[in-house]
Image 1 (cartoon, rainbow, N blue to C red):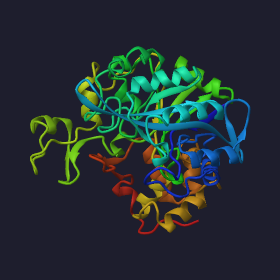
Image 2: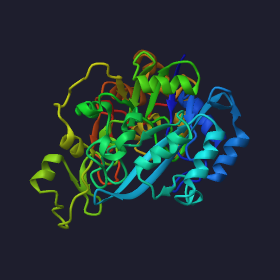
Image 3: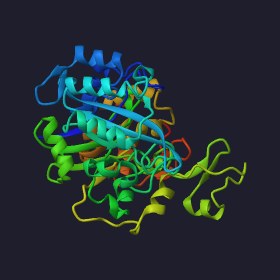
Image 4: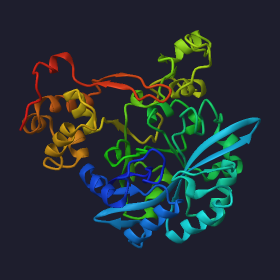
Length: 409
């Protein structure tokens, strides 16, 4: 069975998250978007865990159901520790098949930090030791390094990361089967480094609000069970793990180098020219994902390895409509236009990726249709994100913007 999965989100108990990040609202948005499998996020937080236990129905296959949407038990851990003479800040996403195993995970990790402090807790434990603890609890636990390229908190981040999987996880590297590319990179960028060839590259929203779930996601064709999904990822089987849906990586918050406080956005070439120093304040720049990939890559841009899992790029429909209207994504007008299209024409994923151009032009506002078509064709302009700032998108071309108002239904 084909289905879309977004494994990495956060609950209302994480910092800077919407109070709407609760099961009922998440399931409603999952249906609008076309997501069949959603990570719970934050199972280490006792209040969220209690809500999950009392709200979700155990399907008996490692998934949990609410209102027709499947959930998989996940959590993100922030490990901050010293190794190799450097402070490391590594985020890992944990997958578990049952509440019994989650209880054991939480009991063990509570000895290393305050799990109640945040939905994504900080614990003072080496990522290698975290892997050892988890795999001792159960071999069915699945561990995925999160958003592996972001500068401050990731496996390969320029500020606190490592130069190889083995340097971080040591003897447990063999038990790592998948990596999360993050919003600021896509599989094509990761294909440039041959050491990553054996890993499944997954993509998730890391969402802090229900409107943003699915902005990156994964397409599977497997049985509906925890074991089937994890086995497909472990095998990197492109007959079962079919593809990923990606942000345009330039839109991510850390694609380019730069200094947010100085409003300096810097390409890798410009950064090298300036010797990694901000030309405004004279301090080191925050080196972004593109630069870091180039530092470790051993293949040219555009290289496609054998057995790869393909991907397509997408811009969420709310952002498309907001760009057309010249409004923010939280605008009531933007939300009204979104709900006039979805689910009338299908799910958001169907509207963005499957509905034929002729039908789009006939059944959606003309500018919105043109914008969706431009995104499908990759014909968009994006000022790359840097140092925590999202990139700025321009979807419609000048020839697309003749009408002053958005066509209404």
